[in-house]
Image 1 (cartoon, rainbow, N blue to C red):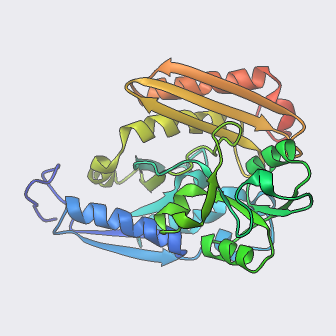
Image 2 (image 1 turned 60 degrees about the horizontal axis):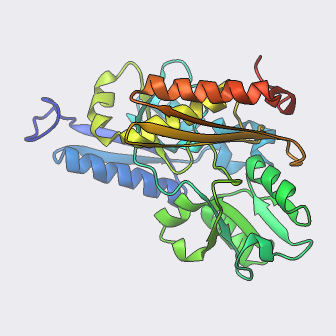
Length: 321
């Protein structure tokens, strides 16, 4: 390993390999992490190992039917295990709430806009869509809210990377689609957003808009090198969100939302669990002083208990009890 002046640690990395999905958005994220690392460690050779995951390959079925969010990370984790990569970059909302044994969510970077975005070529807002209009979404969470608020719309599944989804919209297969605003902004497609959906009722998924970096626990030096990239407000917020989701068996099969904001030691969080048809919903809000990850997780746990007390378990047949 080489020494680097002004490095936050005495020993700087000589070479780091980032595992990433090969979609345009995933590669943007990996390149962003690469550039941040190069600023920290100018002498380090930072490479990107592009990979195709099962989640990218299976496009004709809903994620909830074929294995959930873990399909987007498994191949990347294998690359960490066999030494082909040192770290893996993920959209945090795609990372399972319970990390596999031996793996660590080593770093959470500053969050982009966490809201959902309404994208359409012909209509300015969701409310403008006529009866029977087809709206595409990959999320049971979004579907449940849409069915509750706008039952006259047709909600159809929408899979594929961001460019694939936009292409389906542009070919007229959908009158509108709902996407995470963060991805559109990161790829310079903000102009395609017709409206941002409000946090209430369109509460985002746990971790939406944030980047997570995964490493192996047995390589603590890599976690140390990544430490300067951690963003404290985001880390606290997603720690609370992921605790709610973890307690409620959060997966692609559960219409579950959790969004927290931490500001000057105070945290606010909103969460819901719903039936897919939108006919039943449990909503909980929390507010507490948070000065550590443990405090954030405690608030998330309290919100999860509130949801369970309201009967959220009845809306999640596969919940771990």
